[in-house]
Image 1 (cartoon, rainbow, N blue to C red):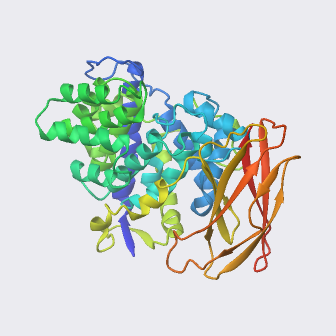
Image 2 (cartoon, rainbow, N blue to C red):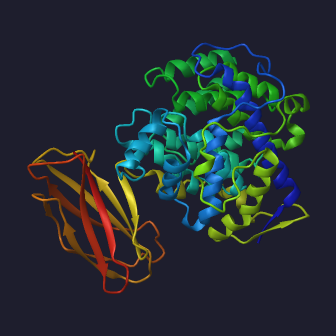
Length: 482
């Protein structure tokens, strides 16, 4: 039984949202500047926090979790919330929405023709998943990857959200910054650009380089990616946390002074420091300067489903609604928990297992040109060899990986529904073996499609899947872009 002290958890989550608001407000005036800054504190008017999409989108994710629950919440649910509730079309936001409006599912919605897939839009909104799974980073990254791949495919932007979500979740349990960074690194590919940037900061810090020189090395290392990209900006966050030596103000000032996506980097430092030290660690003067209101700019509040209580108006309300969901999220992930007035009581080996990378590998080891379809008795993952774009008379290969959701072997029969003049070569059945104790085990089915003389913008090949053992008839769309 996991026992969490309600007062402590509530205080840390409250401090997370306060820190997010402080950092976002402080960083907004400098967003996008490529040169170094020299700030000492706020330059915004007293009494009002600035609106920030970093926090706005997490209000939408809160709505998704409240409306659909942790059992159903996935990239499809979040994608529908993108289309209905989030008006901006900036960079990767606009690209993923345009793709989804054509019927393209995540992560392909964030992969196809997306030059911003390595950018910052995902990792800046990871706190909600961490706060819903305090001390359990693998639960946090389960939802973080469903979030990130909608608009970042399987790019560096997605790895960045796995990194920050894992750090933030673990910060409820682990106090050492260096340990938190190592936990974050354990949840992303060893050779990805995020990991490279983080290791650069660690090495510079260990070798005694000052923060300005470390910042210069980060900028040079990420120059090929360009402006507003995740590897450098995540590096700025790590820089602030290390060189700030545990001080809230100094950590945030170092990070924002690095420049680039300053509202995002400052807000993430604020949220991590808030979780680590609670409200006692947030400077009173900075907290009082902006208060705790939440001002939105990237949410269409009129688009939410009728009956939902609406967007939280301040950090206290956001905290209360986040805390209310924690037992439900743990229950959905097979963990018994209860709030208590006594000390936290985690599993016996909880800290030792935080750096295990086995589960994370099952999340990020997939093609960006893929998407999942739920058949209830099985999960079908469609994967293309490269892009799904196709020309008239061109032949393309694709495969479907079937993950058996039952403990019984089963035979699935196929019927193909094709656009006029198109052809498909592939077997009409596949046998799914029982997965037993191996949840990552799958059965692969392969096929080739040849386009007809004419293609349209969106071309759907439909695989109708039936099983004699189940009543559900599944329809798996194979989407080709003309």
